[in-house]
Image 1: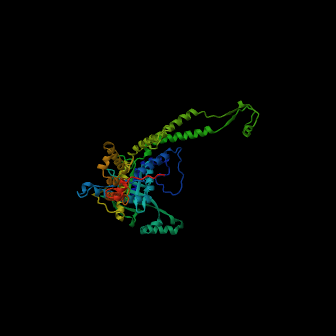
Image 2 (image 1 turned 30 degrees about the horizontal axis):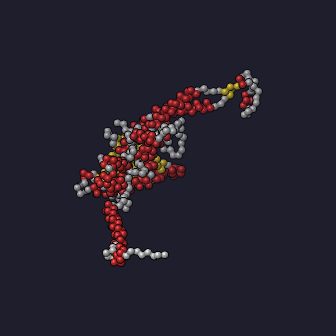
Image 3 (image 1 turned 90 degrees about the vertical axis):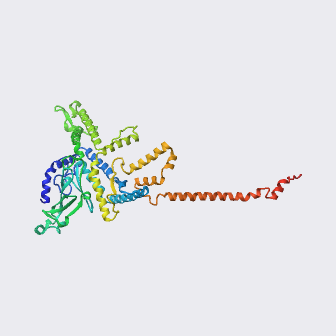
Amino acid sequence: MTAKSRYDYLSGERTQFLDEAEKAAELTLPYLIRGHEDFNKGMRHLPTPWQSVGAKCSVTLAAKLLQSLVPIQTSFFKLQVDESQLGEEFGPKVKSELDLSFAKIERTILEAIAASNDRVVIHEALLHLVVAGNALVFMGKDGLKLYPLNRYVVERDGNSNVIEIVTKEKIAKKLIQDQLPADVLNEYKTNVVDNSTDDVEECDIYTYVRRDNNRYVWHQEVHGKPLPKSYGKAPVDVSPWIVLRFNSVDGEDYGRGRVGQFIGDLKSLESLSQALVEGSAAAAKVVFTVSPSSTTKPQTLANAGNGAIVQGRPDDIGVVQVGKTADFRTAFEMMQQLERRINDAFLVMQVRHSERTTAEEVRLTQMELEQQLGGLFSLLTTEFLLPYLNRILSQFQKLGKIPRLPKDVVKPTIVAGVNALGRSQDSASLGQFLQTIAQTMGPEAIQKFVNPEEVIKRLAASQGIDVLNLVRSMQDVQQEQQQGMQQEMQMEQMKQQPAMMKAPLMDPTKNPALANELETPPTTTNE
């Protein structure tokens, strides 16, 4: 099969998921999924929801997932040494130095991620996951590239491992005419000669990816002919093709989004919002009625200005009223209840509005929401963060930006997640350990049993801080203490020398003049 025929064959199974994704996008962010095969560029008319709760919740959840998976200030992974592979000569001092070296490697990778567009593409992919439940990310040399659900198909085996991926894109023929086969190129040149406006003609380009044992191989095709320079391959664990799902269902090749799980509440809120908005607009319309037998003419009433005096009877003039205030109140209360349920489902914090609302209550509310977030990104950790990190480490090692790490000794571990599962948790645990010792055994026990140099190094490593030329070693501290003690002894000696020099002068046995002065009584002078 060609890549096009394989894409068309696998598109049948994708139809149901794509239809659900379009319905979910219409209630939240309509621009994310725009039809099955919509490759049109530019602005197009999109449906406008009657409420903004869905868009707000989707963006908020995607932002929280981004902050949890790829945090800005801390590292989302941690390099650890398998101590079982090390010999006895590797003591605590060597392990501490390795942690500092690993922290430097981690900072190098984080700086490269911060300088690239990875977070922008990841946030867009998370939006697709929340709404549509599926997304495809390609990690190329120029950065990350996102494929929405309507531009790729995928097939998995019984263990949910990806075995086939086919993508479809539009590309200008003039960009790839040097790689087109001869028959296709001749046809293209003929069309250009016959029609001068055809020089911007676009063609469909398919990328076919399949698994071959422990590696992925791929190539691109145009008009059923492969492009010679499009072949590539990579091991399974460092593949640039990352197929993402928000939730996994056994036996299904695609995932389900968060919006699809609460589509009922969103549809109800959409209907009530539309009814309430249209009813409020009808209730706000002011219409006067005039009795047919009234002497007051409607034109006179319409032309009368504010405060004008016209001739007529008030009983002949009436105002049209909707009289649906109680019904509107019922709909409004139901809308509030639906909005509250949707906000809780998408982890939007709602603080109780009261004068007695304390910061502790706000903190507990935030912690409760973060605990719900822990179950949401568990699948993303295994299907996104691990392949993403392995690919980055492989590229950086090939380019020589970081040293090569032995796979059997050094293992990267994902530490991103809720409430700082990684480095900040190590720092908090160490602080709690020291506090427990101080409370149970007294502060002097810390000075007696705890190595302060090791504590400082572990705190710095847990927060990703390089202690080189920042923290002094114990040898420097001891040497400085010895120098201080020597200076104090010299100062004391200098203070004692003047007293020792004055001591013989004050001793009567060693100074005869002082002895005669003490024996001779003082004389008095008579005035």
